[in-house]
Image (cartoon, rainbow, N blue to C red):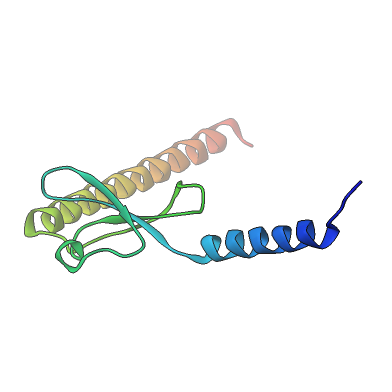
Length: 111
């Protein structure tokens, strides 16, 4: 049947080791100034300030590492944060108003 069982065992051990080594290696994906997508085990210094994704062993993005934000991006983030805060305050005001109306209704009904 098997002439060389140790050969199969050795091959399996080597493949397992390669799989584990590649699983521990970090793979990055980034886009250059011309819009070309690049992949590599490190990001070149020229692209260090740009957003990049960290990929798992199957090439699926598992985390986004944000680069240095421009003034316009920072302003947009601040604008969106202010909108979110205003929406949360408006929701709280509606909830308070609804609670007052329900309390008044319950009082009128004699509950």
